[in-house]
Image 1 (cartoon, rainbow, N blue to C red):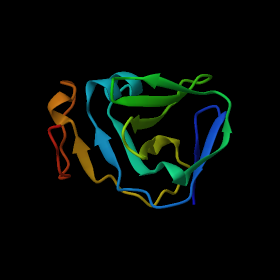
Image 2: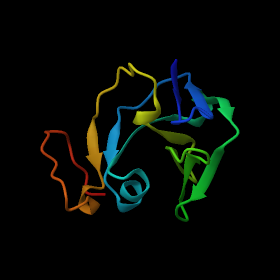
Image 3: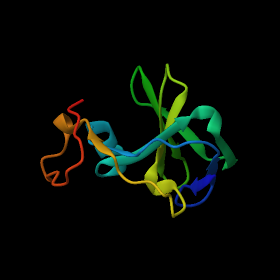
Length: 126
C-alpha cells in the first residue's frame, strides 16, 4: 500500500497494487505544468482510491489526455490517457519511502535547453 497527497493535503490517495518503475517525462506540457521534468509511476486506475478529493480538478491537456491537480494548492498529481485504464501518479506526491527508483527518461526530444541528462538511464525520444 502506498499513500500520497498534494501539498496542502486536500487531495489524498492510496494505491493498493503494483506500481510501474518511474519515468521522467521531458515533454513541454509536463515541463510547463511542473516547472521541470515530471517524474511519475503508473498503476491500474482501480488500484487508486481517495481518502480526500474535494479539491481535485482535471484539465483536458489534449484530445488524448487529462491532468489531475489540486484546485487549492496547485499540485500536479495525475496524468491519464483517455483510452487507457492506467493512471500516472506524481512521484513527488507519495509519502516516503516509495521503494521505487527512476527507470527511464521519455520525450527527451522535447526536453528543455537549460539542462542535460547525464545519467545512464534509457532515453526515449517520444
